[in-house]
Image 1 (cartoon, each protein chain N blue to C red):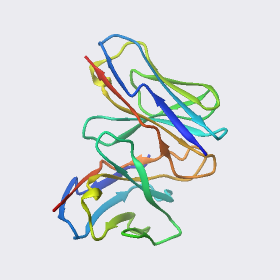
Image 2: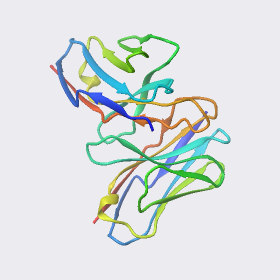
Image 3: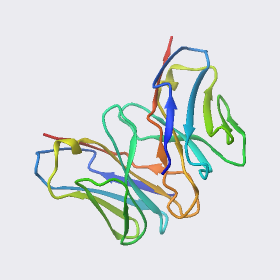
Length: 113
Length: 112
């Protein structure tokens, strides 16, 4: 089955700086890669996703890049703000009947003033 | 619009007691449904998924079971809880043919 590794496990940046979180996946058949943000005690919420036919996608201050050859994808947050502090999860799946998402272990992002 | 309901929000149960967590989805039909567990400070582990009524697939052998008695209802159960069953249980749904999941608000289970 799919295995997703995520780094770093914790990340501390100053407000206004950029943050980058990296993930690698093992199954070359995976073709869908979402990112979720989870605030303390809350449910994970989808913030951005990318499909394997696209190399990069951007939505305001967040962007995701995908390298299919190397089987890794990254989340980039620019101009970080205190409200970006949360745990971020990457995930991967193959779009099919079940489309099971395999999640990374999470990155705790702390944005300091 | 589609919404997902999950209850209860918190639960404290003694070891050896039974468990029943319920999840329902509104505003759609024939969704894919998933149960995930998140241990404290850890990632999300897929426990069960269902692509239709009565169709349950288990990902991890464990002390839990799942059922889907109706199209938009997904139930997670246990006959006898273990301490290791403590965690944050999340139900999620996905529209057939779509890709993104939407999670329910979760149930925080503490087994004492």
